[in-house]
Image (cartoon, rainbow, N blue to C red; front, side, top):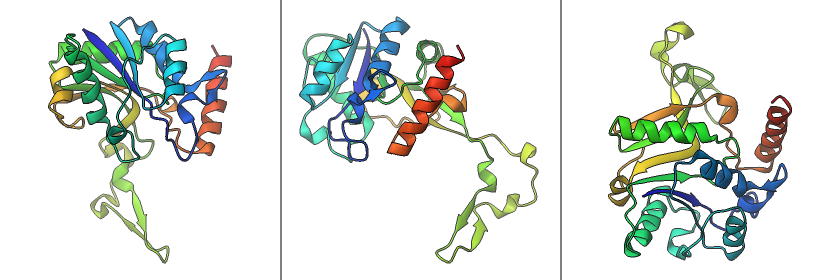
Length: 230
């Protein structure tokens, strides 16, 4: 069984009701649900939530919500891995046998079905613990600066003060869209960011964190521009 799990708790603080707030004509979570369904990768797309309204919206767009996430896994400090582990354990207790499980974030409107498919292919063909979306930093991290309270500057890596940008290794970061994982990786709470994971590169313009109202406005502008250009 291949399972998609979309974590979507109800207690967003900086953008209230973020997971079901309208984004370019649909509840935000709908974009993730529709990409998961369109990918053809999953036997079931489930939303893990503590919120009845989110569960109803999820079901309206084709996902299932067969359980309610406990409050102990729905606070501001709950990491992703235990949430996905809880979902896998629910299906195991019901007699199902998830083999590969993909966590898809509810606030990832730029996710594509092709990237989800590529993640599954990499996970299975390379025998990885996880496969996740990544994108490159727009500036060499080896030239990064830190600033003191008095606004004095210093390099994090002074050894690279004179190194040409083109000679520095490219660096990547989590794009915050999806994590494919073997079921036992989630159950054993293996770390996602390790040499046992493979990256699925996506372009920077599709890697948009949406954590503040300003992020939301910028993401909508970009999304509409991308749709207009299709």
